Image (cartoon, rainbow, N blue to C red; front, side, top):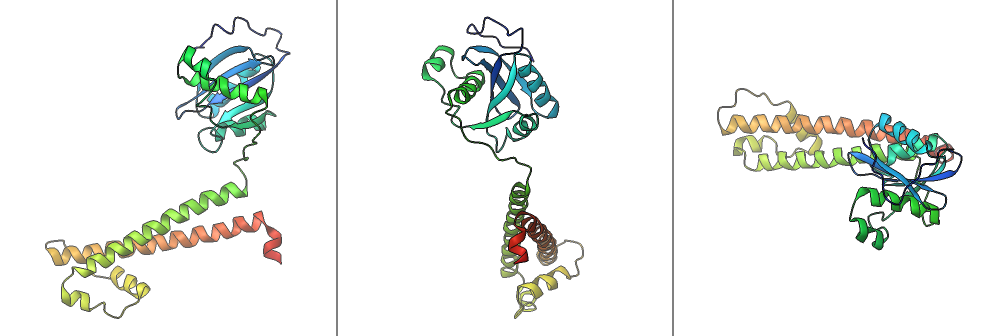
Length: 247
C-alpha cells in the first residue's frame, strides 16, 4: 500500500544507523505502523496487510529507517498477536500498548481520528517509557490450554442446549411416546432417543421422533468432543506444571 507521509516527517534516515521506535495500531484487516526517531520525530507511517507476508513487509519497512529494537503494539492478545510474535522472534522487544485510541488530544484535534495517529501514539508510549507491559508469547502451554478450554466451554454450552431442547420436545410429545421414557436417567434417555427408528417425516409424531434422535446424537457427539478436549487439557496442564502431577 502507499506510504502516508506527514508534514512532521520531512526527512529519511539514509544511514540507517540511528535507533528507531515502531508503533502499530491493529484494526481487523490491516496493521497501521508508524516509525519515530529516538528524539521523537515522526519518520513515516504506512498500512500493511495482516498475515505472515504483511508482517515481514512491515518489519523490513521499519528497519529501513534505522536500528529497530523496540515496538509498541496494540491488541497483542488478539489482532496484534501474530505480529507481536514475529517481531519478538526477530529480536525486537515488544510492549503491549493500551488506550492508543486516546493519544495526545492536541494531535488528534489537528489531524482528526485515524489509525495513523494511534500508531504514532503507540510508538510514543514506548519512547516515553509509559508502555511497560510485555505481552504473552502466545505460543506456549498456557495459550494452548486457553484455546482448548474455550472450545470445551462452548461444547458444554451446546450440549446443555441440545439436552434442554430434547426435554422440551418430550414434554409436548404424544403421551404414549413420552411414557416409554419414564424412569430413565439422563444417559439412558439419550441412548434410547439416539436408537429411535425414524421413518419419513409426515406428521407431528414422526417429526418428534426425528428431532429426538437428531438431538440425542448431537448430545453424544458433543460428549465425545468434550471428553477429547478434557484429555488434551490434562496433557497440556501436565506439560505446564509437571511437579503437580508427579507429586
